[in-house]
Amino acid sequence: MQELKCPNCGKVFQVDDTGYAQIVQQVRDAELENEVARRERELAQAQADRFRLLEMEQERKREKEISSKNDELSAKEREIERLKAELDRADAERKLAVSDAVRDREKELFEKETAIAKLRGDLELQKKDGEQRESNLIAKHGEELKLRDEEIERLRDFKARQSTKMVGESLEQHCQAQFNAIRMTAFPNAYFEKDNDASSGSKGDFIFRESSGETEFISIMFEMKNESDTTATKHRNEDFFKELDKDRREKKCEYAVLVSLLESDNELYNGGIVDVSYRYPKMFVVRPQFFIPIISLLRNAALDSLEYRKKLAEVQNRQTDLTNFEENLDKFKSEFARSFTLASDRYRDAIDGIDKAISSLTRIRENLVKSENHLNTANKKLDDVNIRQLTKNAPSVREMFDSMSN
View 1 (tube, helix red, strand yellow):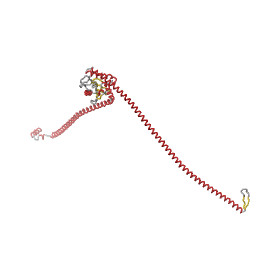
View 2: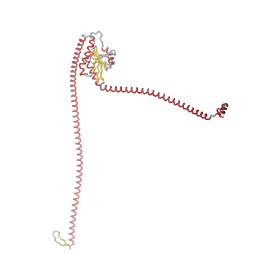
View 3: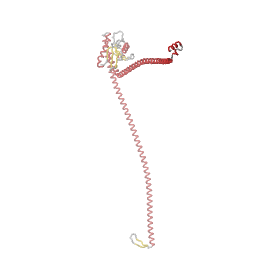
View 4: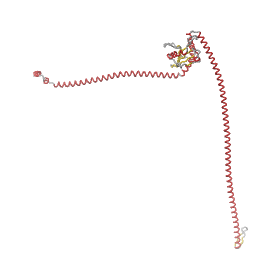
């Protein structure tokens, strides 16, 4: 018998082995059923879990595929957006370039139109200015022609009332008066006097000189020529060029100016200052109204070169000093060479005299030595002489000496 205790009520009861075996079998069957059921549940759960895992895996795969597809779609969409942005940017750049090109073209056209307008304005201004200058020049030339005509008429009238001598003198006096009128204001340090030196056979009318310190920077020889309208033989300006150039060179002037009223109808000389240096160097021909202007022109040009003239004068002075030094040196060398030659000749004469004296003294010494030798020989002979030798060939004298000795 087996005792069993009810787990619910706690009552103890006994069962036989068969009953116990049945109970045990029942318990076993129940546990087996429970175990089977549990196993079934576990298997079902495991199967469900596998299905769920498979579904989850499939879901993940689907999600991954969907995500990949979405990424591809997103990338394509982004590429599409980028391409659209590039198209929009290219379109904007194209529009901007077109706008800039149009603006630049419009600006260029505006600048060209502005430049054309400015040029047209400048042309108009230049045209008006040219017309104004032309008008002024015409008026000025008309006034000058009027003044010239009046001056010519005045001079003609003046000359008609003068003698031939006074005609020339009046032009000189006119130029001198013109110069003296502005001498103290324009040329306070200048020399302007008549040329009175006719030692060379001719002379000019006036000489103008001006210096700065000791440097003369301008010198002009003037010749004034005029003649009466009634003079039979008419002179030309060229007739006096050669003599004027000769006077300029003899008086050591740099420029030569012929102030002339000759050839009154010649437009060349009526036009103003005429440079005739193609005939003679530094020579000009002017009408009396250009007498002061030619002096001012040449003087101002010389003033510009004054500094160079001073430097040239310094160089020339230095060159002169150097030349004087070289001449003094050459003179000293020449005198020294002459003195040296004379001294050398005297020295050679003295040496020759000494050599001759030495030679003479040598000969005297030799003669004295020989004389001494002869004297020694004579002395020896004198020492060796005796009565016997002296009377060797004179027996009578020897007998005399013998008798005297007895």
